[in-house]
Length: 282
Image 1 (cartoon, rainbow, N blue to C red):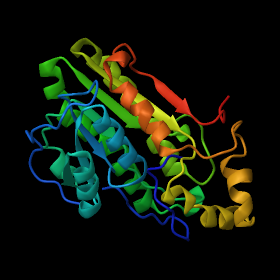
Image 2 (image 1 turned 180 degrees about the horizontal axis):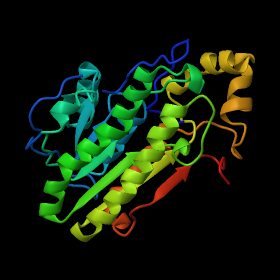
Image 3 (image 1 turned 45 degrees about the vertical axis):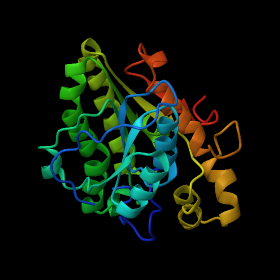
Image 4 (image 1 turned 180 degrees about the vertical axis):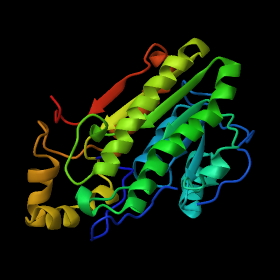
């Protein structure tokens, strides 16, 4: 479970959206920032960028010289991160798919990071919550990729990085919508890699285990209720039960991998899923 997830509220089928508010028109030509590394002159868009893993990714890309557009429902949070990295904020609602259908993006790097979570047995899972998760974590990435590819094809260069999860490769109980969305994202990423390869566009997934963010740490109480164990046992016996390395992943570790996938050194890496899970799936 990666850092772009929300803390699931108590009760079956409930979900709270994070990292995503209201999109209109185009995102174009916002200038540049001083070049510090190998991504100088590149424009990057990071969804769910106001905090957690998204903010760490924005910082890592900016440190390499990219001009970063921080997209988030939390406009003030996005603005704060954008100011920190010398980029710009985009307050956007990824549930507004009609607006995304007409969007055009002239970005060189697209990081689909925004996500939500809801935990419930399938028989109790709220269908509306299921649809929200698939919209934000599968349909919205499709629409953003669709909006970005024409510019990438025109310049014969592009990097698409989809923040998946261990749950894009493995299932867990009570997470039917999340697992389904992440598995779908894996497939979408591979198709994008196949279609984009001849146009200089790569597409890859990053698959974290549990990342140390306030959102993941906030799930301890919910997991304790779900599994009927004390909170102090959750990290060791639930979150990290299958990990060889018994600690949470730091957001900066994932962000460094994203930055590498965006670099010229990864030009031949496409259609892949990069696992960072402390040996969970070994």
